[in-house]
Amino acid sequence: MGYKTNENEETPRCLECGDTLNYGRSDRKFCGAKCKNAYHNRRTHDIRAVHYKVVGCINRNYEILDKLVKLGISSIDIPDVVQMGFSPDYSTSYHKVRTHDEFRCYEIKYFMTQNRLFNICRTLK
Image (cartoon, rainbow, N blue to C red; front, side):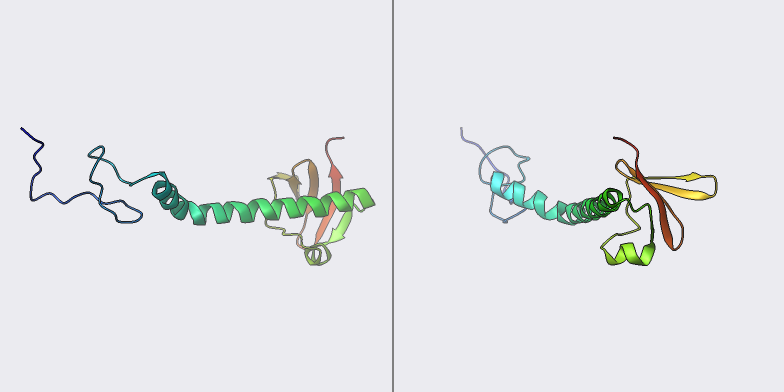
């Protein structure tokens, strides 16, 4: 006695390429690892793009702040630092210290007002 299929049931198809899945488990969704990876990569592309943008901005900010610290510059106007490529919207931490907003980009801390960064310094040696 052979394996019987219900004529009314549709043959499952790969979610990526659409090929029929004639063998394997009944709950199988992909025809192989290549299709499975392509499907998940496509679905997470936007999330990864945002992640890479944020990490890139934080790293660029760190390089600029590191350069300022090495040059001994502890205060700079925001338009000047933005012209260097700094993005004020990205930091690794923030908290309010009395009347000032303290930001950190890894181990470099700085205070920011509407038009100036000041007290730029390294917290670790």
